[in-house]
Image (cartoon, rainbow, N blue to C red; front, side):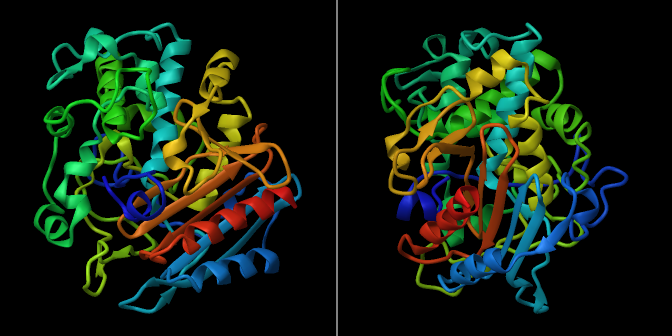
Length: 398
């Protein structure tokens, strides 16, 4: 989908949603989030003045709320700003849930790579092998596209979200926010368009790639991508405030409301509730800063993937399309690699959908993690993106 980042700065994306393992309600025990301290993966959780200063700067760029968490060997620190709900005036809290948008892609890529490690799938398998006839027409050919190219965004496939009114206009959103979409319907939107380049001959961010990855997970395992993410990642790591989607439109428990005017000359509307099937495997996860921290610690710490598959995930190519947001960025398999001002780089995956922006950064060994979410559209220029990047960079370089 085209979001504020796609059109103003760069192109991460997509929707998010809710519920668990094919149900329309969260699993038992998935209660409303606390401040996150009880499940912190580190020794202590405290408010940080330095982090608060960054959050205050982000708030000045037009966001409605910001929640941020920075974690390292010394403990976990948090800061918040703004209101979770403009209707009630409730302040944002550290443990509030939010839609993480395309940061979900790292979860999906992790499941695919686990299947590779189990010998049930190969990164060199073609899309046609697993999904016969799904990618065809208008120059699209699934027999020439590999699973690796899906995860790496080197397939050349058109991004269905760029031709999807629910994500690109206020009227489209209001008309279809509760419509249920099948993965095949979303891929079919992309098939109306010719590919941008031959597979492997370029790089372009396309949510279609991850809809197809989710379909392949289902074909290999007999379970939906959401069931596999829940069984393989959410439950084993104890991510009690993280949910995978069905069609349920709400976020349970304490959460941040999203607001957007879709870059139109109109007041922003509350976009929190919608049918998450519109995003599917390309971006449908709800989480918190604390749970995302635990996920990235486990992933980069080597607890979710075998060494060979983690190396494959961290093997990157240049992604120049995203340079306006992150100069020098590279992309692996569901994982971004972004240069640090102090030298070296960090990993993570941004996520954008109308009303929500997720940013994160994690050191190569998983010992240091920074996660933030901002609601509202933010600035019409690059200042929101830059201040969010500065927060992550300063925390990881400090």
